[in-house]
Length: 124
Image (cartoon, rainbow, N blue to C red; front, side, top):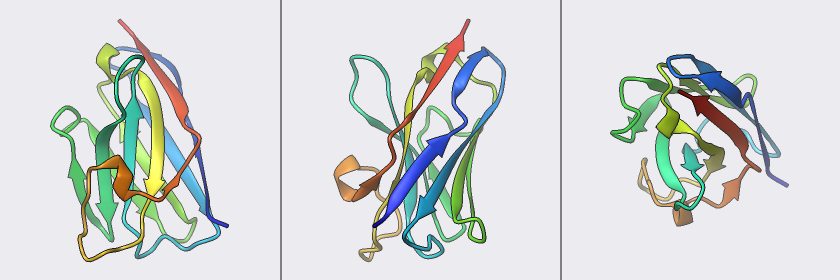
């Protein structure tokens, strides 16, 4: 059984940094495309970042501020979030999908495995 568990969320001030972790069990993540998504109150879940092998992709809203990475030994994905803004406030979810011939996908329905989410709150 594949399980994803996020951690690292919290309450910070604008301009601060946070690092989220997504620990995966039940499957090795070396070759699996993975992603980070977020959902703010009253809004749809949106794409934040994705990683396939060592290649990465980002939403325009976080490009240059967030960095996604994986540690294949620890079977964990990370999201380093720098220069945080109040509009980054959301529940952050990690997700994993099986490779289907396309390295990057931004649609939520492309991902079959999800974590429970971790809250990030950025105050101004």
